[in-house]
Image (cartoon, rainbow, N blue to C red; front, side, top):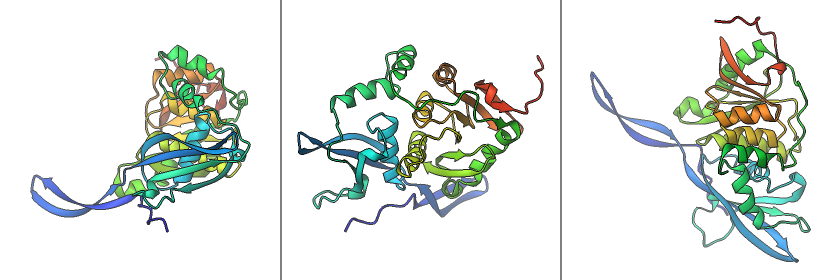
Length: 291
């Protein structure tokens, strides 16, 4: 039997210092533990394995995280490539719940050199922003629908609050990022929390991959913090045309959105938001006023 998987929170003792005095209390903090993703494949009929990545994550939805990571990094072509996913079953390995094994189906080709090439071109590791964007043009990502889906401004106003209401673990710890997938009516389709913002996005995309729901061409991705190049790249890999961030976008995230016809919204809150790219998908905004 595999050990009980650690939950998303743990209890600890905290000393609260206030002007009126100091007190001891029990507190709940977000769990952060490493997750190793191992890929098993067949090479000339022989079973082989390779450690693909180690990431710090909040335990929960590990299979989705592994599947989403491998897909958005271009290592998996789709759900049909996967034979099964499991936690490590090696008896001599401690904390086996911190290792996820992804098994490719027999006959699914895999080139180990892909790992080196891929992580250079899709994980924000290019020598410059221009090289990173040019590398994305070589990948076979789903085509994004031009000017669709149409998103009402009133919906955008409501998205940060809808995301926040779905953050159950954040309510207890205050220490998690969130990624939520919504339809154009602000209906929440999937929400995942994690100590890493990119992990939260991978979990959302991994859920869709395993459920055979990709691409998300009529969905909106909402993230609780800033929007980076890597989040935009992952959204593009999943066919998501609209990304809304509660925080600021990076310059390369804006460049990516403009170059690949994505809609990028930042600083979203209940009384306003900034459109950095793809304004044609947002309807119902007031007339432009130069100030």
